[in-house]
Image (cartoon, rainbow, N blue to C red; front, top):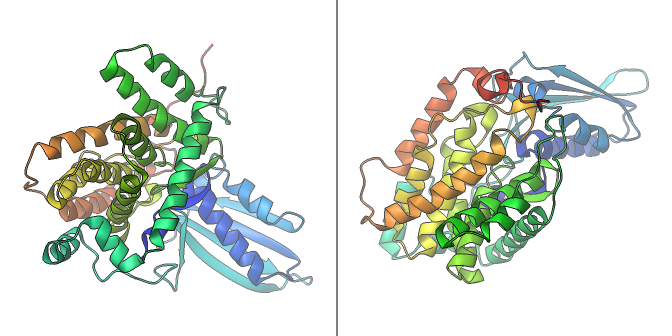
Length: 401
């Protein structure tokens, strides 16, 4: 299992698979073929179907700025390896092919090609929750200590940067009004939710805060702002909202939050390793569902839960999102994506409360839910997996007069 640094990618929205991944691929191919006279890029499957709404063409054009470039769209063609595929071709001055490269943006900003399974090497000797829990019990360690054991002490500097970027995105989101970019002209809600919430009694005030934190980050992402994919851009509002909520309500120290980030990253890593965090591959259950599992486990750890209670909380986070489709309206990470972040954050807080009332024992394990989520996602018809052809995306959500 690879480093949790691959779960937390710092970058600009609106999509880790459609924006971050293609940009990284374009940079990589351009560096490999600097002397080419012109370039051609073919976008396949889900990457082509919702690429314009996710600014895929924009980031590729920006990367190849000043060079002759042609982008072709093939939304009906799905390559066997992954629904998010793109092919780069470089030509010389005589129009002869200099180089070709087909790669796949598999979620969270990560890339693979036909010859690699991962961009990075494995650093963890275990790949399932059960294996990790066995190690923790044998060594009398917590999940965050397991992360430190194999990542090294410098993981805390990385997580400190992750947390600072998360905080900054919340702050910007709460301070910004107006409409989000794109044809839906969707109004931002984070700032108004935060202000209105101050006028209510404590329970509703706290819930309003939680919603506003999640909306703030998700709206920043939809605007192309700087955020942390956790584990994806489309689900980036869930974890920071929960962490900030516990910071504000329960006065959590930074050290506690960073440890929770380590555990959350481990949970996301297990899902990524054994299933998928790509909406194009398994639907939104792999994005918001995984984010909810990460946030649920993090919350339970911050409240002093045992590793069994943390595992139970994370299991509920994923289980209760099983079957969730990826159906972005107009190909934008706005409807229903932004609201899903807010409600997943609320669910994470509830999962924490529920698991702490138990001793952590339950019937269906986290690993079993991960396997079920993957199988469910593969069984979904392709139109319900980030193609904007099915589900809510089928309806016209443009503003009505």
